[in-house]
Length: 323
Ligand code: F6P
Image: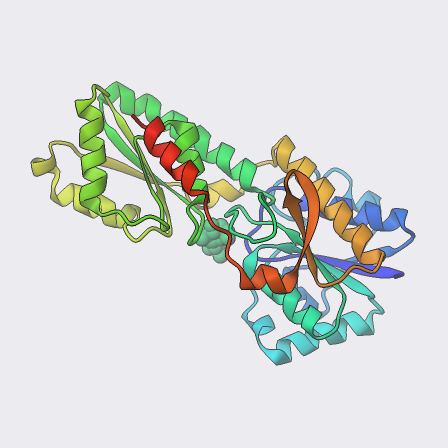
């Protein structure tokens, strides 16, 4: 393989730049040249490419976001869009592609791979909902940003003996909320994977006060049936009966914008480096992730067909630790 391309796609994740850098420098070490694709699959369809040398990826490892830009691209979900993308790759004599992204992006990798084009994915999403990697790029940084916010909320909650609710991202996956909840010492955690009503949340907060706690923190996943806006409405309407009010913070995209932690830079360097090496060595149709602490590949067909489950023991542990 003489020339490969790299793109970042879907929600940006801290560590994407470190992964781009690792792809470029690992490919160059194997005597292959690299082109960057701007703005994900949209750039591939439009032919928006830029050559990337070793110096072009200097000074980016410490920055969040992605120097190549990212996008969500509905056109790539159509066959016509994918054919246009393939045309770009062939027109520019590109022999293989590295796709840095999460579920939607790797569904795209799988589609290209099914069209017999050599693709290797790099597991990247703050949601940690991608099968084939126990941890994905950006998760550690997003967790740390959410923790900094929860620690601050606890300071003001303690001063006023208040209950606070913080909503974190994660799409339909409760991983971020569960782990922020444990690490922040939350009194209650609400995630999509476990059914819980507003009355359940109110009971947990009330019981925390009865056990002698002077303030309470509830961490909610954005994908939960009763998310922050719904819980806020419930608590507001029932505040007299419940005996306490709840202040709400929705963290949102702040979680994605941080400088990558050391863990994310190292993970990105390992996964990006391995993706380029394996693609050039002839691997195709796989996701490069981390399993059992080691770099591992999983067929993209399996990645798109399977769902990553939360560890039920960790959920039970969170309930015990909240006492
Ligand atoms: O997948 C990453 C993520 O940040 C999710 O947690 C969130 O639901 C979604 O992206 C937000 O998407 P957008 O940035 O397109 O609004």
